[in-house]
Each structure stands twice: as structure tokens, then as C-alpha cells.
Image 1 (cartoon, each protein chain N blue to C red):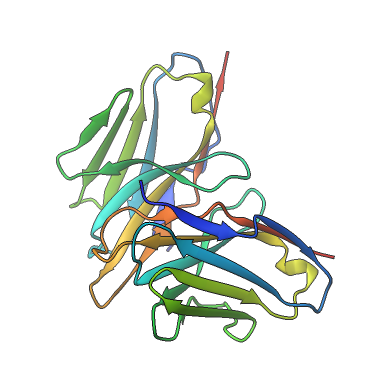
Image 2 (image 1 turned 120 degrees about the horizontal axis):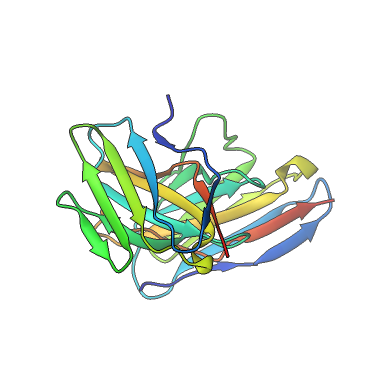
Length: 112
Length: 116
């Protein structure tokens, strides 16, 4: 089983649609969680952190369920510029050593 | 946010030669840097974790003698691809976190390596 798994995608949605991405992680000791966005042939950029209480940033809402080891990202009112690959990212480890694991990514195409 | 600078952004080299990629944290100290590889249409795959002043920790399947990692200071890690082959052609990205450890990772711009 992969350490971080995401919906395979791609998701093809019209402008204005709401789209949700799911992610699960296998290591219950994982400690922090993020969603990154990666545009073609570019480095990933942080979209938002994910907190246990859930958090929202404009059209984006992230949620974490530690019991189910599940993370989600909801995008409302999709824009053309949202087209990208969305990566679920998990930090695991402790002060003696830690690493960042990426999900395979879910590709989103928003069409006019 | 914090800045991580990676150099070069792209490189073309002949088979059998070695290529060095640098990763610098410009405005923070990073005890740990991570090196990733990404093949076309695939996700980032962690290759190794680079710890300042000690040996790197490699992921399973990554040859430590082929991908030499040096992390001599809190702001610089290097990855050297030795005796490069065409199948090593890929997008290599480094990332770093500050000393606190559990913040988000900041990424370099990536290096596109083409071995001919």
C-alpha cells in the first residue's frame, strides 16, 4: 500500500463547478498535512495547510479526519486557472528524522 | 515565504558524465533537505533525505553510489548524478524545511536533466 494515496483523476469540470479531491495516508503517526498545486513542468507550490478543525481559504476548503486517516480538498466555483495537478502531502516522523511524502497527484482540467 | 534556490534549472549532458545540482535555502536554515525525482506525467518520488553534517538516507531502490548527496552546511545540499545514462533524464527537485520541522516544505525551481 502506498503511504499517500489520491484519487487517480483526471477530473474534467466546467467553469463554476465544485470539485472534491480525496487523499488517504497509511502512517497513523503522520503529523502535518498540506495540499500543493503543481503546474506543468514547474515545482509544486503550497496551496494550503490542512488543520484538524478544517480550514478554508477563499474558494478552497481543506479537511482532515485523523481517525480515518483521510484528507480532502474542495474547490468551489472552479476557474480556468485552477487547472493543475493537486498533490496531497504528508509529513511523517519525529525530531529524530522526518520526511515529506507526496501523493501521486490528481489532475484537474477546468473548461470554459 | 522562504526561498529555496536550485541550480541549474536545466542541463544537458553526455552519457557517462556526472552532473551536480545545488540546492540552497536563502533566508532560513534547513537541517534537512529532500531530493525528489519526477518522470513525465508521474508524481514526485522521494529519492533521499539529506541531513546536514551526516550521511543521507536513501529511499528503497535509489542507488546511493549513483546519486551522491552532500549536505555540508545548513543552507546547501548538492546532488551529483554520477555516470549519467539516458534513463536518468528527469526533473529533479529539492525541498527544505526550517529547523522547526513540521512546517510546509519549500521547493527549489527544479532541474530538468537530459542525458544524451
